[in-house]
Length: 268
Image (tube, rainbow, N blue to C red; front, side, top):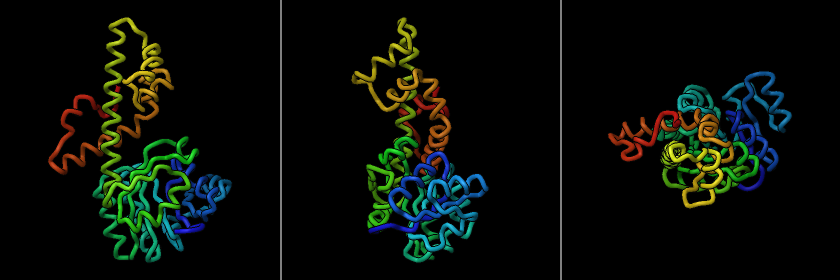
């Protein structure tokens, strides 16, 4: 997909808002859902064309990007509205929301009847990564569909990692977050042990990022000054994703194995 594209965007919030701004800056024509007057004004100020309904974002779009918070919201947007029927054959639907692989597979089955391709592109990073154009994407889907949307996604993402079949973007992201939550669990336990040894948490967090124990969890906690502050910042997103990991594994009659004692629904 060369040159500017017509982009429909649903979910221009904490993560989606910066994506919209990067897409506009890259020259794409962005039509984004804005349900309230304030939201539509904010979208217009960012250079996007605000629309009041979900279906309208699909009309004439080369790519529709969905960046809502929960798996259930993906189902509501993609399966419970006229979004996909409004899209043209040959268009592509990109789902950024982390959720069950079965959800994106159900969306793809629904979209196939319209001739619309679906790509799951789970995100790793935050709004600051989007603003810098260095968000990580784990992307699942047919090779042709992934390559078609790559130039659009490159407006705000690097690296864009193709991880195989549709749904694998979700699977890799869920495993990533399970490992991340386990790292936070290990870190919290390390801080507890430090207290027993008479070492202040701030001292530990200042020192460990320079050693072999470093990790993204440790770097994030060190930047905020405590594990508790870091968990407060990421807890809502991580709690949701760990719950989805548990549900997906249960569906497959599997479990988290040795990661289980390191995880909690909200690491502390």
